[in-house]
Image 1 (cartoon, rainbow, N blue to C red):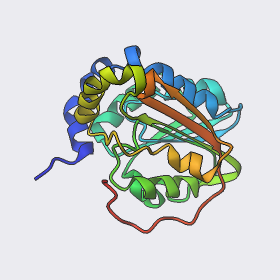
Image 2 (tube, helix red, strand yellow):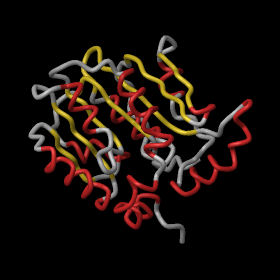
Image 3 (cartoon, rainbow, N blue to C red):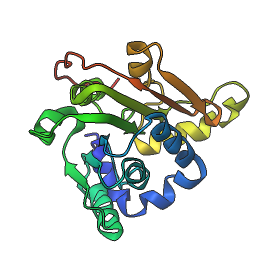
Image 4 (tube, rainbow, N blue to C red):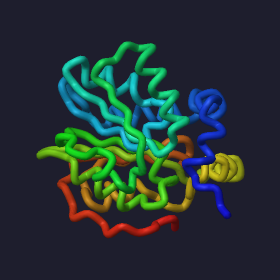
Length: 221
């Protein structure tokens, strides 16, 4: 039986920040995606697939003490890291919730609307990824913005790095051919789309109106 993706992170959570290639490869695109959200002080942000909380310092800096950040992740072990980060930083405006991103309606309950939604390196991992995206967008208020940062295989002169990128995606349980950022670019043709790391990372962001939620289903492909 295949080990669920969120369970494989339980084994690596303690060393994830050090071994994931964050500093060398993935931090700069993370910063780019968050900058593309154009966050303002006082904004409410939903961080889907927040993991150990690597986005949290950047989001708190952007929304200030008057803003709010809510993170959601399916891995309790990864969330332990996020909670430690919150305690160490003394943030009172950050909350993380344990639950499946494909069932955000249940996880968030009566949480109010958000001004922005962020997905970093998670839609390529979540099985019900379209459902997770749609349910998050349903929580956006008027003028709400969404950003997706995710993985693909390098192209062009960088294609020689594709085997390494494929190994990184396999290790993370990520579907390298999914292209989840197109959920933003297809819904909002004016959305910004930035390609980084030789095509290994794509960032897309823009304003997005709420959509009809997708029917519950397994969308692993």
